[in-house]
Image (cartoon, rainbow, N blue to C red):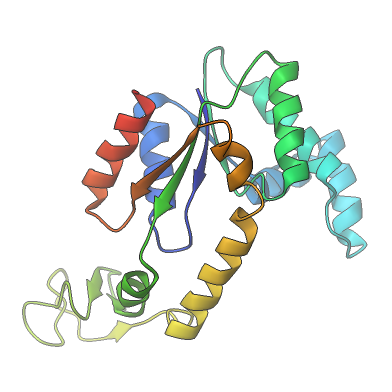
Length: 215
């Protein structure tokens, strides 16, 4: 089974992708990770990509397609793939169709974690962690039991990510919508797009995704 998993930063896409990997033995294919791994390994495609990046240019769709082809060829028989961050354009969607067709495979599902922008802003901007042990907290949803004292280690220093602010979160959302807008209609026309409420409990989101995959 091959799927595209979509969701803006903060929607929990990484967590759900990892759960799919663990539950189904799927391989998560992130274009960024693939590029770094291919360059590090010195594969023919990796060397080609490195030359392009060293020249300060963007890696072409052809190189990315070759990388995806290599990754699909390396999968175990019957192993499915989760496409993360690809495709982002109509041309890339067509390339992915061709890559899969060459290998006798298809794309079964496109699953989007649907989020409420205002609620996502609240979720992300309220996050903070213990500077000592890294335990996570939230201004509204999970405060330390004793003010300014970590429940886990007793530390008193807390920190927030500098990019967990409203302006940055809304910019990320706008970028996400701009990137997914070109490809969603393509897959909606095929009837393979499902939207799952990404604002629920993580286990509920996982169960909803499993229900889609089992349909």
